[in-house]
Length: 294
Length: 317
Image 1 (cartoon, rainbow over the protein chains, first blue to last red):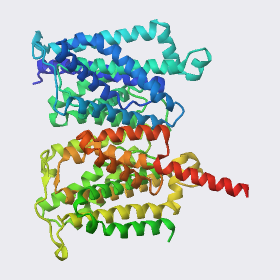
Image 2: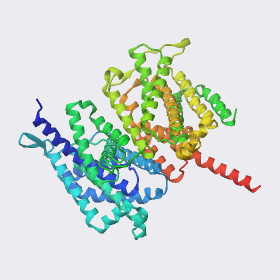
Image 3: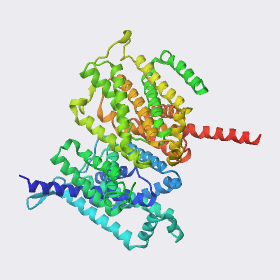
Image 4: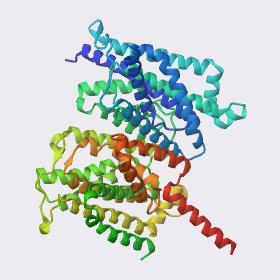
C-alpha cells in the first residue's frame, strides 16, 4: 500500500530544500549566461554568507533573516570588486583560465574562513530552529518555509530587475549577444561586474537562509555547494534562469525521494548521476531548446 | 639519449644520496616525489592531451585501496596488488573516457568531478569492499630480500623510482609519434582528424597511461601512510592539488609539473607554521597569480621565451 501522506511529506520537504538550491543555481547560471565563466567559487560565496550570518548573530544577536538586509549589498560589492580586480583580466583568455582562477578563488575564500573562524562547524541557533507547523497531516519545518519565502522574494526581485528595468535589459542583451550589446552602446564590462556582484549576492543570500538549518564548515561545504549549483544549472541548461529554478526544485525532490525510497547513504549521489546523464544525453539541459546532433 | 634523459639520470643519481644526507627530512621528500609523479602523470592527459581532469584522486584511491585491502583482508603481496590497481585504474579510465570524452573544455572537467564524487561515495558506503568510512590499516607487509617496506628509506626509494618513471614516460612520449598526435588533438581536434588522427583513441590512450601511473603512486602512498581514509584519498581536494600542481608548473612541459611540485610542497613546508591547516591557501593564491600573469606556468613561460629568442636569432642571421 502506497503511503500518500509520507510521500507528500517528502515531496514538500524536497521542494522547500530545492527552493534554496534554486537560489544557489540561479546565481551561477546568471554569471555563466553573461560572462561564459563557470564560477567555481560560487559555493564558497554560499559558505561566506553562512559565516557572515554567524558573525552578525554572535556580535549583535541579529536574526539570520534580518542580516540578509546587510549581507546581500556587502556581497554585491565584494563580487564587483573581485570581478574588477581579478576576472576582468581574463576576458579574452581560454575558458579554462577563468575556471582555474575561480577555483583558486574558492580555495582562498575557504582557507581564509578557516584561518578566521577555525575548523569546527558553526551554526546559528534561533528559537524557531526546530519548530514545525502542520498543514493537514504534513508537518513543515519553519526554517525551510522561511527559506522558501526568502527565495521567492529574492527570485521575484531578480525577475523584476531583469525584465522591468533598463539595467536588466542591458544584462539580457549582453547575455544574448555581447558584440551586439556593445554596438548599441552597452558598457559590457560594467554589466559583467554588476552581474558577478548579483551572483555573489544571491549565493550569500542562500547561505544566510540556510544557516539555521545546516552547519557551516570552512573548506568542505564550499565544494559541496558548488557541486550542487552545477547540478542545478546543468539540469536546467546553463544560462537559463527559469530552468535553473526548475532544476533546483527537481534536485531537491530527487534527493529527498531517493534518500527515503532507495537508500540515504547515497543522498548526494542521486543528483550527480542525474547530472551526468543530462550532461551526456542532453547537454542543452532538460528544459533547453532541443539541438539536433549527429 | 637526449638531454632530458641525461638530466633525469643525474637527478635520480643525486636523489639516491638524499637519505644519507638528510635522514631527518624523509617524509617531506616522499610527499614531494609522489606529487612530482602524480602531477607529471596528470599532465599526460591534462597538459599534453589538453583535457583538464579534476578526478585523479579516484586513481590514487584505487591504487592505494588495492594495496591496503589486499594486504589486510586477503593477504596479497603489494607487488601483485599494485599491478592489479594499475590495471583496474587503466580499465576505469577506459570506461570513464568512453563515457565522457565527447564533452569538451569545462564540461569535461565538471563530469570528472561528478564521477570522482560518485566513486568517493561508493568507497565510503560499500564497507564490504573498502572497509567503509573508518578506513583501512595496513598491519603487515612481506619483507622481500629482508627489506622492510614500512621503513622511510624504502618508501623514499619507491617514491623516487615512481617519480622518475613518470618523467621518463613523458620524455619518451614527447618526441614520439604519440606525443605529436597528443599535441595535435590538444590544439585542434578537427584538424587532427583531417590529418588522419582519431582523437578519441589518442585521448583514451593518454587517460589510461595517466590513470595507471597515478594508481602506481597511490599504491606507494598507501604503503607510506599505512592507513587509508576514503574521505581523504578519494576527495576532490586531492584531485585539485594534483591538477593545480601541474598547471602552476606548466602544462604540456616535461619539467613543469615537477617544478610545480617543488614550489608548492616547498612553500607549503615554509608556511606550515604560519597557516597551519590552511595550507591550500598557497595553491589558491599561486594558481590565481600564475593563470593571470604566467598563463603557461612557471616553467612554460621561460621555455617559450627562450624558444622564441632562438628562432628570432636564427631568422636574423
